[in-house]
Image 1: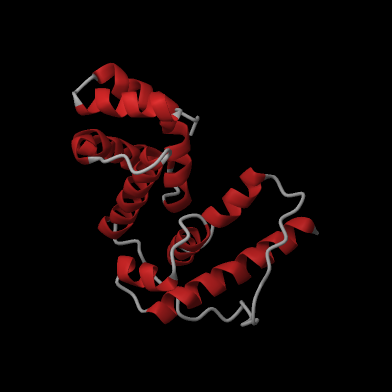
Image 2: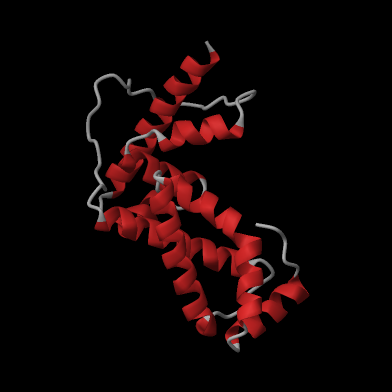
Length: 183
């Protein structure tokens, strides 16, 4: 997301709250790319990403009247939370939200470190997108949204241990993909 700037951001928020469509268009143009990337962490199909993003912007623009500025960048954080929540809702609605409890080909190592030096970001993103939905979702919530396993468990209606297990297994699977890529 391009930096809007605190004075400019506050002015855009005020204008959007008063129903100014040009301010909404400006925010959309500045933020759509970033929010598409956020959505793509959870939803893989590009048409589905567009649908979720559209639903997210409808929610953002219809809810902007309730938005309260907390600090510079709070608009970005607020919009990101909406996109993540809408992405999770989409996954639940499609009933594609599943957790894999056992995978024999992934060893249970104590802690896997991901060494991604020299691998283009796009390749890493594709590796993450190729993870099973449950793994990918928990991995993204931990790594990008900085959620604890307790918070994730509450968000997804799973046990805290399930969240931790999904994250551990996602990291192990990604480590294997990274290793294969580097060969």
